[in-house]
Image (cartoon, helix red, strand yellow):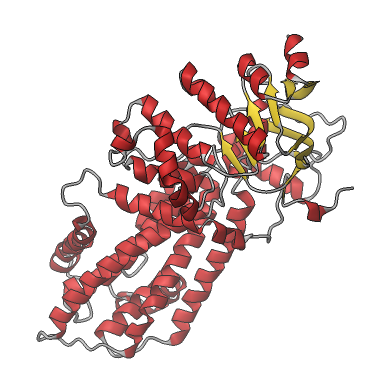
Length: 282
Length: 254
């Protein structure tokens, strides 16, 4: 038989479950950056306001929440100015749903390229996650500006050291969205119905996440359900860090981080197993 | 000195026919369950008839290609040529068999894969180059050459959606012509241009194989280009190899 070392690569019907070939991603670093550049340039072509939309989107959403949930429904915001209270939840939620949504449609949106040329398919969702992270960081700067404005106002806002956890919070959100999105992408490749169902579920999930209300509003007996959601700890830690100096029990964040990691790992394994096969059915 | 660059061993591929419906979910689950309990017979190539609703696109295809060789694939529509190139390009997986290879491969199954309409010619050169497997540095090094070759230097800063289809194809081919893989996989990209353009493509491929020792796998309906370009031709019919040999021999028999 042939000596395997003679050959550089092999194509066979199936890949093992755990041969993730993550080192291959490094060889395609240039492609990842190129996709990122393409999306950055293309996303605001033929718009008048251009990148200003990155600011306007969370501001408008927050304004709507402010009117509906604060002024009309009178939901409490734990004594924090309503605008400031809604902004972190909105920003984190938008980041999560954008990342999830673009990852989950990887095969459907890239079918024309995936049908013509090989590269590790993970490059596409990764570049989109980085793209959304750019937008996130711009939106966070908007939040900081507003925060400074309120900090020196007459409100009881006290930052604590846990604001330093912010990068970790972002990482947890990204890992959760990427992992869940990769798992879903394998199924949306085949069953387009999922796209409709998931849009609906995603909206429900937003209301199950404390975006427009504080966790303190949730009855004690349901609380455990809320903390299972990795985003709850992320948003609550964010708020606790910036608004009160009471730190959240570390266990919540650890739980959130580990379930996000679980999603990420499961997503990577399933996605890799199906990244080529999925194109036969997409 | 020529050496074997790519070797395919008993490649087979079947597809499942039929539309997606509510029964597909049930089928998927039972298929998955059967596979878990190892009741699925689909592993065995010999004498195995795929379940109804499946069709063989390729059966037991084996071939080798050496460096500097142009290997042509011909056959009627539906003979399995494109499926084979897709498997070699790693766009779809074989159901059975394996392919071993050396060095980098690049696939040209389409002119201008991944071109983005809103981006300028310049941006698209980089985008397309990266998609086809070039590194940023390589593209930078060859950028002027690519632009010269394409003849669209005046329109480099124009979005490609404003390009004529001729300019579009020339730009895309210019990028592809400057790839530097050991194995080049070309589908009927040539059908896209006029006679002059086709001559240019054939010339470029000839140069790559004879002067630079590249291996080229080339699918075409055009007997003329197969005859001028290929060292060896494989004829496929209904997913099987029916004829192999020098182009004169294989093509004469039709």
